[in-house]
Amino acid sequence: MAKYLISFPSAAMVVPADKLEAVGGDARAVIDEAKAAGVYVFGGGIDEAVPPLLVSADGTFSAGGYPWAPPLTGGFTVLELPSREEAIGWAARLAQACRCCQELRVFGFDPAS
Image 1 (cartoon, one colour):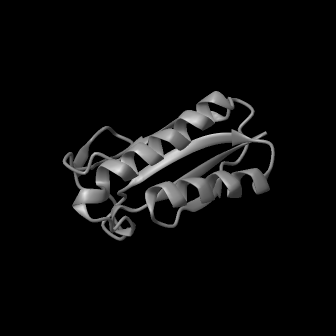
Image 2 (cartoon, one colour; image 1 turned 90 degrees about the vertical axis):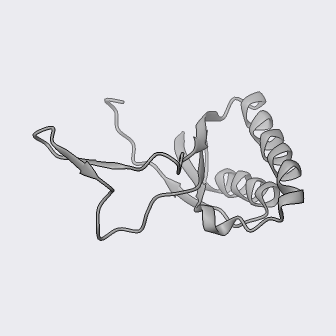
């Protein structure tokens, strides 16, 4: 089985303030279903109130991420699933719950992990 990253950037979720509670409830319901199905690995959202640090190999660090890359924001879920087709199905359920499209990526297998 492969691990799939299902994610969206913050700017993709354009939801009126009065609908945010419903979106949160719907998203948690899908996550609860993934947990019950035994496919949930982990998930969460980037805490955008805490700025990133760029840490070098020598341990020095500076404020911010890669200057050439767009900022990493939004939410993500990692599921372990037997097929890409099942991953697409879960991504569609999360897209419906979050009211925004989701990006789907597969993690490369690392036998040491």
